[in-house]
Image (cartoon, rainbow, N blue to C red; front, side):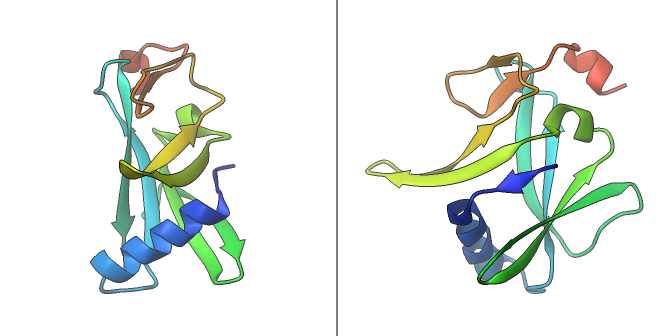
Length: 121
């Protein structure tokens, strides 16, 4: 299961209004082989799910938000909690990933027990 905090859901909705013509689109979460720890989170919007996507839903008083994760990324993201916080330097998403065996100090790059080459085979 992938989940978002209420503040992360609110920020995703704000970004959808700003960047996505189809307000019914979903948040796509994936990983890419890059960053100081080997893997990096990638967030973007999708108009619809693809056949191999796992679909998760997060709900709050504003309705339901769909989250799409491709099958390749799912094993490394299972149990992921995404939060959003703001401080004097701006706002950013924070990732709490129980599958991460190492996290870069930036918080956006991580590694899992399996090397990145095995994750992307």
